[in-house]
Image (cartoon, rainbow, N blue to C red):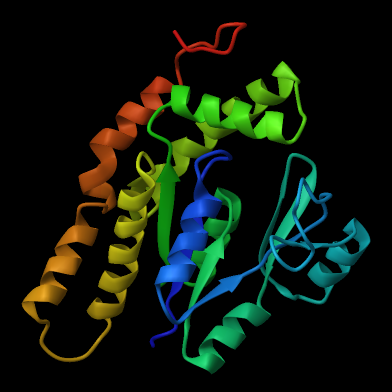
Amino acid sequence: MSGIVFIISAPSGSGKTTLTNELLRQVPDLLFSISYTTRKPRGSEMHGREYFFISREQFEEMIRRGEFLEYAEVFGHCYGTAGRFLEEARAEGKDLLLDIDVQGAAQVKRALPGSVSIFILPPSREVLEKRLRDRSQAEHVRSEEVIRRRLEAAGKEIENYRTYDYIVVNDRLDHSVDELKAIVAAERLKRSQGKLSPEAESIIASAERCRLPNAQPRAQQILASFAAPVTPGGSTR
């Protein structure tokens, strides 16, 4: 393995966690970096599984010690990736998978220019809004203000898709997982030695369809859907 760092970012509600879990389950030799955060656990989240939940004082001490590969503050909570995960991946001969926001992705790209960035998009604002409402109900959150704030944040995050290497539109889970698998396989193949087989060339061609220049027209359509206002009942017009 070549120690590739794969960055996955997406607005809240895009299905990033489900896709990431499937990718880890189906693709060998991927080490997942669990982020640190100062926010409280939600629902069934557990310390050391979804996140390492720590206090702001502990987080700031980790910053002082230079332990983060990247960190950022989002909605008043801090999130960070410990550099030790990259060291562990390299020591084990694995590739590293980061699930981080656009601020963190930009930091990693500056520090590790060879990293591969992937942005997950919802099919439209309408679909994302439904997913956010379903999540809010599961979290026993009924506030329209929370929904509005998350949709506005999603629209702003999506504007950053142009800075990513690949775009995956999560409209069908199985198809989206296949695209992520193709991207990982293609990046590994491109770093391998020797002549590529026809099968390898086919995998690379599949991944290329998700490359920013090829995926940009659809990404622009999705971003345009976020310009539509939200009605009090929650539907878009």
